[in-house]
Length: 452
Image (cartoon, rainbow, N blue to C red; front, side):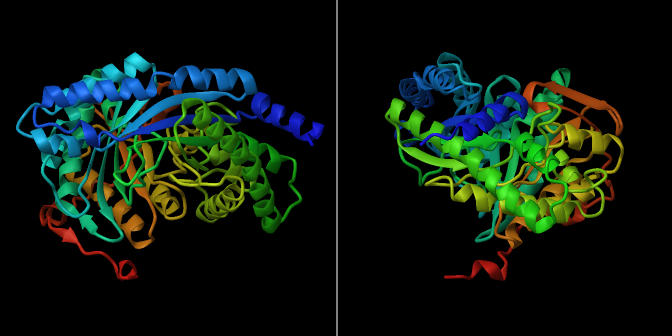
């Protein structure tokens, strides 16, 4: 039986506390589009994406209208394009990015992810060509997102790829310096990348996924903050329990939308990603949740412990609410996309070093962190290596989405607009790791990998 109190509570969550479905993402396999002729391959890619996703946006709009649940983004994730590029690597790989952009425009999605390569154990045919093409691909497209997985717990860390990605990130910023360096904001470097992540910029459709699938990402940091604000007398055990119950309610809404979209599109339901994804809007911040627990400012001593509590409680509550949970699932800490993180970084309390510590217990890594434009490529590579090491050793996904602000220094700002937000340029330790990065090779997998 429907409970009037539950209905009113949900309405309040949506109207006053920024509860929404952050994304409905359709994953599409392009393995059957592989062709040695890149033009034929691109034709197949465009035809398949537009055929499968033609109703994605209209269906999501109908669900939004019927249930009154905001669906902020409609997205597509495809098979890592490096797999397609392997068959035609001597040709202009950027044609695939142009095709993805054309398909995204045709079906009306916000982003399309999968201009990606998986090189954790080495470079396969097509990987080099695709990675080298990323700066151009992201500079000439608006909706295409790229990712590269450079490490995993099972494989270790590909340091040759790490060195390469430091340079690629700088080139992405340089090529889009006249547009707030937006190219680098559409590129993620992963360790232990999940194959069913619905969130951009790191979404791709893994080789082990079905031909087509619907994955949903929920978001409700404002809801969690609001319930904590009403419960200031709770100890931390009570705080954890309250977050679990709230995460259950948030995820249940995501499950409803996922199943409804799956039914209407005649596409299998994949997963619900439990992640609390913030926005720059006031009241929709993961940092403000941590401050509601009792921290003066996010970044203060105790922040990592508070984030660990939050992440664990979100997982425990959310996993009971959905039949299939996946993706990243936890709490995101993207600096430019979170009003509380922005404020803490502007005060100088939240530093890159503190963020790195926080990434050991959260869902992702150094996300949407803006750094000085003169940061050397090898320093960027060193940051990537550090984050990958945290992910590799702890059996978790870590990621780096750094934006070198070309022509700007620490203390200035970049403004991307929309969900990508704005943020201060954060100071970076520039002591050189050059000789370490130049060694190349592979950091071996840790003992934790030997579990078979």
